[in-house]
Length: 286
Image (tube, rainbow, N blue to C red; front, side):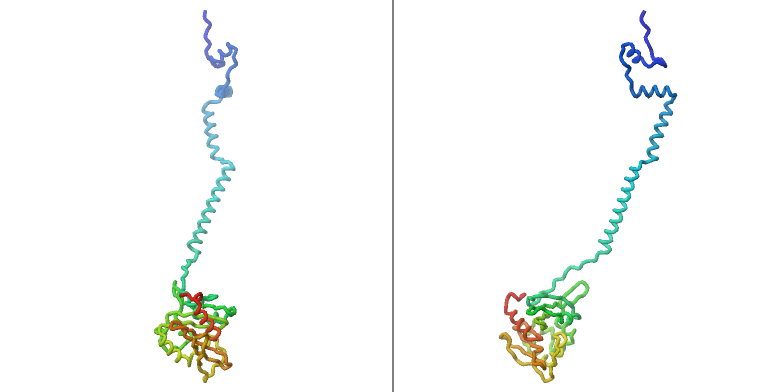
């Protein structure tokens, strides 16, 4: 009679366990088998297991770890700093930054100078009175500003500013601009002329009031007698006209460098230096 085949019982496990026992091999244990045995021994149902898994899963969301909170705080702080930086940067670019006007290039003077300063008609006297290094020529650019433009003041504007009663039509005699310079503390005016003949006649007429008209810009302190008059003098091979003060020192001298330029100076040193520079190509801007 054949032996009766064993089947799985409530106490006893499986056919595999019985066959293993019969063959003398150790029973292979798995996590699944152990879990099943534990659930059976403790009287735990599969519903209880599922409920525990759900509870554990939702619990991880309800109580985030401290490291997760720290990361969130860092991200929020970084976002706030970025927003603040953007606001400050936008204000600096669009709100607080002044619009820089383009630099306007002024015409160059006829002579190259050693120094250059820029001022307005109302501030000429302050610049003229400033000391200049000996034997150095200072060019003072007199500008007029209007809106976003900048240009050199005209001869007429200069005369109007100092109340000069010039005996002639400045528009017909002089070009628009002029050059104001200082050499050895002696101011000079260099004019480009349109008509030599008209300029010559007007200058002879102006001699009567020239010292009074130019006393401020030329800083004339010496008394000029009403009986004083201009006299002829040759300076560096150029015919010049000179007016002396009561001390015998020249207070005004002028000369036509050529048929295009007229120089009026407060002293002979300045006139002589300007004539010298006109004769040397390296000093000419033309």
